[in-house]
Amino acid sequence: MRSGRSLPRFDSRDRRIMLPRLSANPSQRDLFASLLTLLAVTSGPSLQLLAQDGIRRIPGAAMAFDCPAVIVTGRELLHTTQLLPVDEQGELVGANDVAQQVERVFRQLEIVLKEEHTDVRDTVKLNLYLADEAALPAVEQALELRFPSGKPAVSLVTTSLPIRGAIVAADAVAARETGADPDRRAARNRVNNIAGRERMAHSAVMPVGETIYISGQAEPGDNLADATKKTLAGLKKTLDHLGLGLEHVVQLKCFLQPMSDIEQTYAEIEELFGDQLAPPTSVVEWISSLPIEIEMVVHSPQASATDAITHEWLSWLTVSPVYCRYSRIPGDTQIYISGCFGAAETDDSAQVATVFQQLQDRLTAAGSDLKHMAKATYYVSTDAASTAVNEIRPTLYDSQHPPAASKALVQGVGLAGRTFTLDMIAAPAQ
Image 1: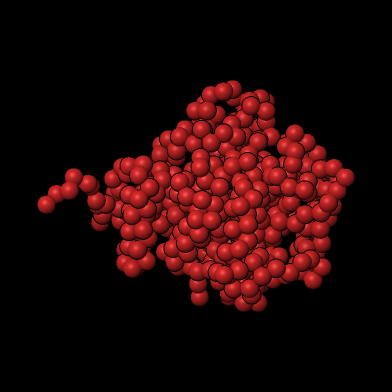
Image 2: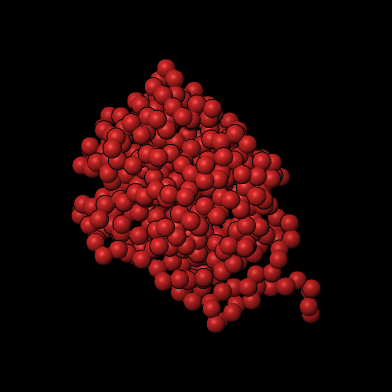
């Protein structure tokens, strides 16, 4: 007997599940999401869907923008800076027009990727920064148009942006074919017809090889400029410890306040990198007693001593059982897990529990697990959610193998009614 509900269809020609348009009912969305995760885990390579050479996308059904995980093997990874809705002169485009701003941000992404000989179809991770959660439908529509055959892993956060009047911004990671020189360093590039600071790169290419994720570090200071300088000095000390230099840095992410003083942070970053182009940099406004925390993505050309992911600490910084100070992925495969969300009608603790269950399901579907997490970003918008995250991690994580991480109390997590989200980068389980 027909129930009137459409079921997923599997198209054997292109190995895709053709999903029905799901209702807004959370239970229906969760049912299909769970079904797809189960199929991906139990059915092997035939259901590693939307596959490109070197890129596999685990499909999702929970939200229009949701691709639970993207697995990248044997590709260089192009990291972009935070792209804003501005014209070639750096002036805001589309004041009070969300759709126009979204279009401008995605157009800039296309230009940056084309300059580096790839395109948006090869985007594997997309970080979206929304000044207003009401902008999300316009973003979803843009994702549907630009990624009809496979979306990137997506994370969201609600934050003030560096340009007054900006409603949306984005940075991305895209995969491209490996270059001829296996020992090349993290090459940074500026695009002439894209606005941006003259001494800061629009993109940086991370060659295939060992990737190091350095947890957010923070130092107190008299103001944002002072705290930024001291924090960058601390990160430079970490690079020295690793036997690496500033030329190996691929990307910076800053959690700071107030956003109105962002020029101070940009100036300190450019000063540190001197004659080099500063790496692509993204910023989020947080709520904290500290002015800034900064994390780094670093490429290491050194030969790895092990084939397995490692989680390591620094003797001069606090040791924690729920985050390491840096992690190393020595192989050529990285797994990007989309931001996870609980149901809007549940309390903070329930949302946190749901998110961590989603995380485990997605890691399993992608061939990883909690011991092979490399880099976590936790966004919380309430103290209760922050407390719940602190309470649950020790019950799930191996204290010898926690990911590098940053946790930020922020204005919002991108979806109305939600108070917590996380996204994760992982390595394959051995």
